[in-house]
Length: 395
Image 1 (tube, rainbow, N blue to C red):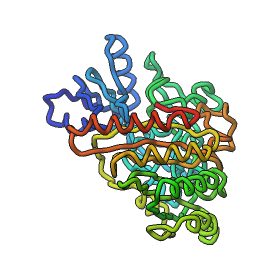
Image 2: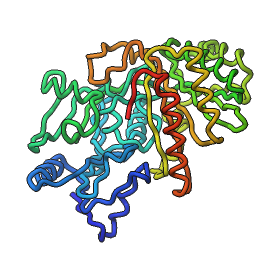
Image 3: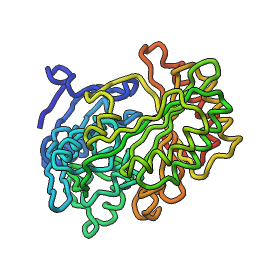
């Protein structure tokens, strides 16, 4: 275990948070590399009545993995063991998604999980875990076979279908850090050599953007399960809206192009549809962005759309986006349905199954700290306009 205080040379190495606004400097960071080290720290903070947070990847948008007192940092738990014959991987709680993807791809395997490479497996899985293979293979939490959890009494619990079944249920979508500190997971994985990635863009007036969004909304949650799509919507200035539909398919190229044709014929794209067949790891890199950890000024909130939005609601949504200055906000709409909907709402702690249309994330990032108040206000205003349109809210 590595114990770091602010005066230690390596302290800054572990400090950065994904959201600079929420970054805190702990009086003590304990970087744990064994299950025993985590148990010792849990026992110590409880016995001494200390405030603490648990850190794995550090992508908690609201800084829930940050503390000014003690940070129990599990990034030292980075073991990955692949059992190809059994279709399983055992992974330490501090492993990032890209580290895991690399280990799996080396053996021709894949996992359905998110596109951001530096997200930690622990928080991602515990919250559900949507990604570009979600509609074809389900959420990340659906692959969980067993989790090792250090409880509040510093005892190790092994949660699976036949051991600690209630805790096992809760670990699949109940939220990170809610029930203990995870140290290890066993996940089911599957063979996947190639996937097709696609993208197409439009620059449209509010009315035309509303027509296109309505068409995407009708298609995306009901498309063949081989296809997972994301619609990105943002202001481009002058009352115009930019839209980009991206995604991934494990089906044929002819099926994919046929499914996208109603969108590309409804409104003429500003950038033509591209479809590429890539190896699994290259497909990950295609959507990943920087592979190094980034710390930025940002704000994000989310809504679930549980029933299709009416034409009037979509028009209001586009009007709200168009009022924001160019680049001020982007709405990221992740399609649901497919394998996500195959499980009953009470089968796991993640309830947004059959009937859920998509999730809208309102995201804004900026460079200068002096612009923070303006961007926070833009997100809040968009939420006030768009939120009543939707049916369920995330933090």
